[in-house]
Amino acid sequence: MTMREIRVTEDRAQAARDLLTHWATFPRRLAYVETLSEQDVLESPHIALGTVDEIVTQLEYQREHWGLSYLQIGFADREASAPVLARLARQPAIPAR
Image 1 (tube, rainbow, N blue to C red):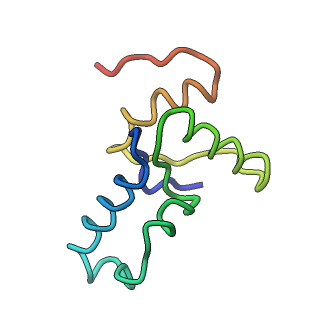
Image 2: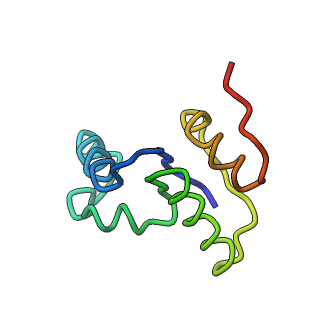
């Protein structure tokens, strides 16, 4: 599963609104972005927003219900995803250098 965005945050709704605002600046690259809602962003399996616990719960649900066995995470999300992946692997996160 390709993850388009991973953001560790205490305010999922605000992060979703921030993404929509950012995406709206690229209307030619993101067709129909103006039709997306905050809820669409929060329910997308390709976007993970929230606390580490919330994101881990989302990814575990996707693994259990859809049989996902891998994640493809972009370079820009490497630091945000580290504590999430460590929790999924049940190992402590290795700090970024």
